[in-house]
Image (cartoon, rainbow, N blue to C red):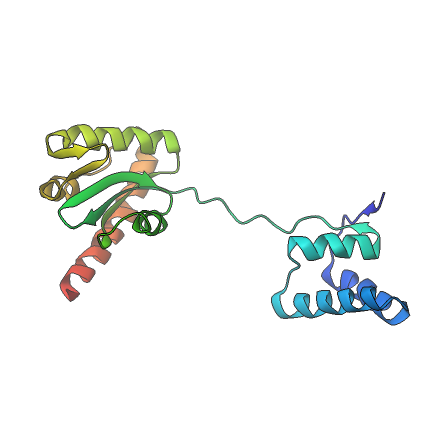
Length: 186
């Protein structure tokens, strides 16, 4: 079993791979090592498949690189599709809109978003509260009539925690200014 490569120093790893390239008579090893070095120099990391191959060649287990940060902010959003609006919550409303677009024949657009906190539970609670507030506009599920947008844009998040509420107000005011700038350009 290969040793664990605890101190993951890129230069050391590249130097080891380069030594193998120079010393090895195995053409496949030389080719693989050259590919790894070139990829690493161009991109700054090794993908999973190359990392496994480098572990086999060098004889040390190379750990995964740093994990990308998990998006912690949660937003309520309104996505418009012709005469309907979908109201929901997501960590990334634009990405959510793109995923909905693949299943929709209408052109979708993100018309509103509002920061609700860093917690899924709080976001779900705020979403349900907003859905109850505009329930008389409901078409089906999370889809509502277009007329509900007036009430939705006026919705402000009231959190249990004052600190979160202040943060939400700051973020929402910046989102409001972005929205008004977009609407002014239409």
